[in-house]
Image (cartoon, rainbow, N blue to C red):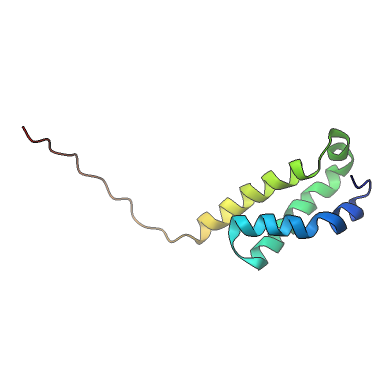
Length: 89
């Protein structure tokens, strides 16, 4: 495992971008997700490395942010109430 944050970014950024792309299906959004996750990781780097795998910290951040982006891009449709079924006797 990389001991320095810069080494981690150099070795894992492509894989993290691929993972982020699977979530949001857009290259630029994937890069933004990785950048945001790494910005959140940097101040916590020492404690995250001490606990183990930094990917375990970064990937849930991707998922959470990616789902928020997808939901924001999804067109809003009014909720339709379903009619109750009528049972034949």
